Structures are given as C-alpha cells and as structure tokens.
Length: 115
Image 1: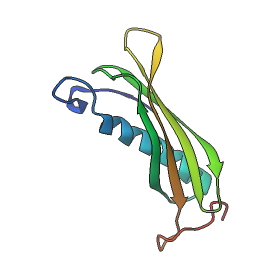
Image 2: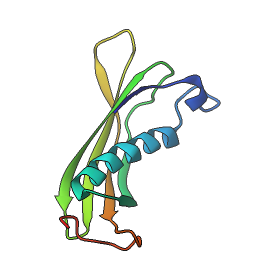
Image 3: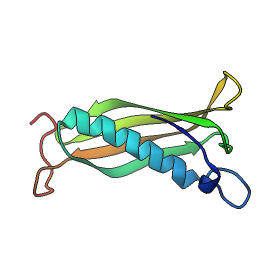
C-alpha cells in the first residue's frame, strides 16, 4: 500500500499523526488477513507499535504486511511502514507493529481460517 502524506494528516507541529499511520497499517494488514481467510477478518489486537522516525508532509509512505503466524481462527501479521522524501530515493522505516486478526462468519463468530 502506498500513499502520500498530506497536510490534513498532520498535528499542530506539522508531523503526521501516529493514528493516521496506524490506520494505514491496519488497512494493509486487513487486506492480507481477508485474502488469507478468504472472507471477513477483524482486528482484535495490535502489539509492539514502535515509532522510529517522523513522517513529513509530502513523504511517500509505503506499508508492507506479511503473515507471520496462522492459528485455527486467527492470524498474526507483521506490518512495517517506510517513508521516502518525494525527491529522494532512500527510504526509512518509520513504524512497525504486529496485528492480530480473527476470521469471522456471517454471524460475526470466529471461524476457521482455512474454512
């Protein structure tokens, strides 16, 4: 997932809101979870959120997500966000976390991931 950080996403100091980044990361993890579960999956936890560097307006933010564990009904997904100044080629890791998702059925009850 790749987006540009815009002025509307900043706090009073001009840095991008951490919540904006968390939302992107949750969305990326959700896409991976739904694909693996072949259906609806919901976020039940986020662990180990670490902010390494600020994101500035105009930075290109890339979010990478990969499954690191699959249980009977749940999945743990490692997510990293990297930022790149729009006029440079180098990137920097700005945040990382692990998200846990549970596959659910039509009645919103946990179901096997491999169902």
